[in-house]
Image 1 (tube, rainbow, N blue to C red):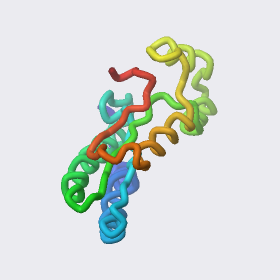
Image 2: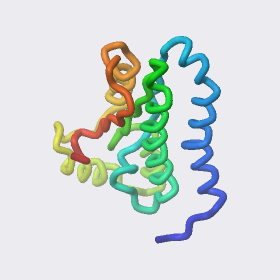
Image 3: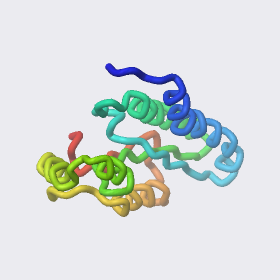
Length: 155
């Protein structure tokens, strides 16, 4: 394990966990009044880990735990809490790695080869579709779930 700097750990946990909990708490009266729902964003790294990403992966595990616990606390009020855990998504998060010299084509080909579904990376639209479904009445009997949008890589 490499060095984990306290400042980075605090920063990531604040963004991904602390703010999520505080925001949901602040919105709880409105969620109860409207029988609303929340869709949190997790990551498959909560299940698989990610090399050199201990704070990030840990924070996403906490998002999953919060999602399950909040669904218990708020479910009797008709509030649903779920999450989406994206996998390999061809989006801006990879841009930095590629700009730092990671070979884009090699990386994309290796990922495509490991994905059971279609041999392609996911898109932001794939994630948005899952969020939209969870937020809709079509998922009206779904709560406390973390839906992996990962092309089957973690199955």
